[in-house]
Amino acid sequence: MNTIKAQLFSLQTLRGLAALLVAFYHTIPLLAAYKWHAPALALFSEWGQLGVDIFFVISGFVMIISVTGKPQGRETAIAFMRARVARVVPLYWVMTTAMVLALYFLPAAFNQNKLDGIHAFLSYFFVPYANSFTGTPRPVLYVGWTLTYEMFFYLCFSLFLLLPRRSQVLPALIISFSVLVGIGATDPGNLVAKTLTNGLMVEFVFGCGIGYFYAKGLALGKTTALVLIAVGTAAFLASIGKVVDLDYRCLYWGIPASAVVAGAAFLERAGGWPRMSIATAIGDSSYSLYLSHVFVLPVVAKLLSSVPVGRSLPGGLVCVLILVASIVSAHVIYLVLERPVTRIAKKALRIRSIGTTPTEIGGMRETA
Image (tube, rainbow, N blue to C red; front, side, top):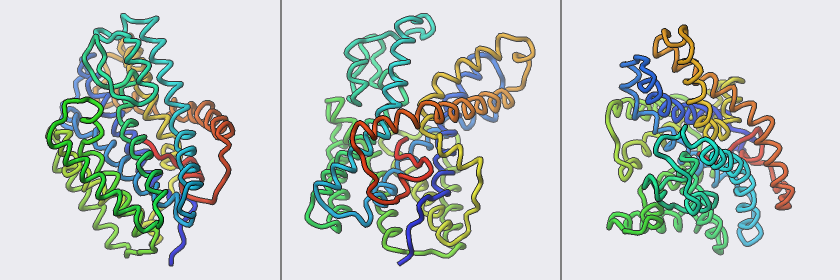
């Protein structure tokens, strides 16, 4: 059986790309708001959302790999969930608090958005709840909507680690999430139920399937892996300019994302993935980038629009400048905030190293 590398640089690169795609998606409306013209980029306005689908597939893959070689049972399940909480919660709580304070002290900067106490409180615990002022079900830190899916998946995965045999985990995931999506097709009225039965949940299962075969030692040739990446990328490109319904994203973007993730992982196993330091660094700070870009984008756009030279820049260049600023800011946040608070959380939760896995080396993140 092939050994599992301590870090998959290919997945780190995809994480960085996924976070950038989401940031790009949120940059396009800013260009239009400040009247920077970028019609070619506007064509890709919806396309950036597929970064979330890549994140979800990678999460499923990493979860399988993270428990490979560990015993089935209560101890592993608890250790798994503690590790996920330590990775996800601290930085999310910090960023959510920053948004709550901004809404409280600078309400004029958020147009119609206003601070709703109950909505804000439930946001900290990943519970979908509509803001009474705006009607939006997304949390205070709006990109945190994906973390509701992530945390629910982590919870289900940890429960399935209690099953008698590891071989039962993947079938249990497939069956349970298929049932949930089937329930979602009936359009349940409750917001929480509607969220947790969305077809997006299937994307985690796609990733788990890839992780299962990877952990079993499956190896693909470089050509086959490259074909998977090419097919997935072509399917992504075919969706440019289309609005993809949330209920069907697992088909339109989840399957292509799975092809790209599988191709990247197996290409690296075959020795065909080059290690790129900058790409890996962006991947390391992808969680910080994902959460912090909602603060950085509007600030940089406002600064650029406040000076004549900034207003005269072409929209494409402005987009690049905004994204570069987001990347740099995110890496600083990763170094001075994310890593320290994660270490504190791991110490508080008494998390011990239980083996070398892709989730514990080089900053791999399990979140979108």
